[in-house]
Length: 268
Image (cartoon, rainbow, N blue to C red):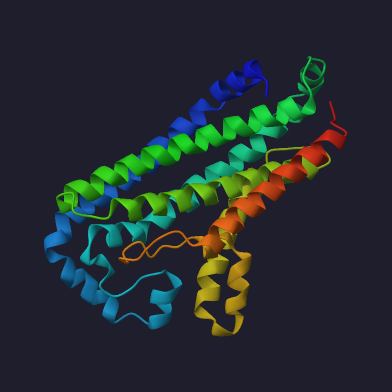
């Protein structure tokens, strides 16, 4: 890793990270304000779900009596705040970090510096990890106070922490996937539309496959399958097979990114 390149990238991508953080934190805080305003009548809202088709409840990971606790309520919206919104930014950032050198035609200048390609990719990856960690930490802190203030601090902190670790892992996966896609492209470019399409597409595939019993096995092709959203259960904990998926796939994509980037003909 090169410290100067790392600090430069950290600063250059700060604006997008701040905007994303503000958006996600505000959405999270707003969801808790809604909960606080209607928690006394929440049973009436929950009754509405009894008349919904079971397939709808399965598709959107909703369970009867889930809203009996603030944590169960938060899970309903968590998937939109972290895996989807932050996941979209993650894959955009992952593609932009490596593609901008060729897009802005600064690759030649960068490669003439006393930097190895391993140092370049390591500096950019570390930048990505810290930016996404910062967003996830801010959302976790917001959720922590939201759950605490709405429950008199009587909620399972460990479950909330595990849920957000799953969220961080899927954000890393999407970003590293975008990073890898950029590496294998002949001329790297920021594939914003494709990146957002990957995140939203895998989510909608996950929703669809949950309803169709005949193709349940296809759920394992979507990263959303590997997030355990049942944090309202008393025995909620990490599932080893889910962690193996995220760590294994992300580690493989990082390794392949190093291999292909060292051999890549970078256009200037």
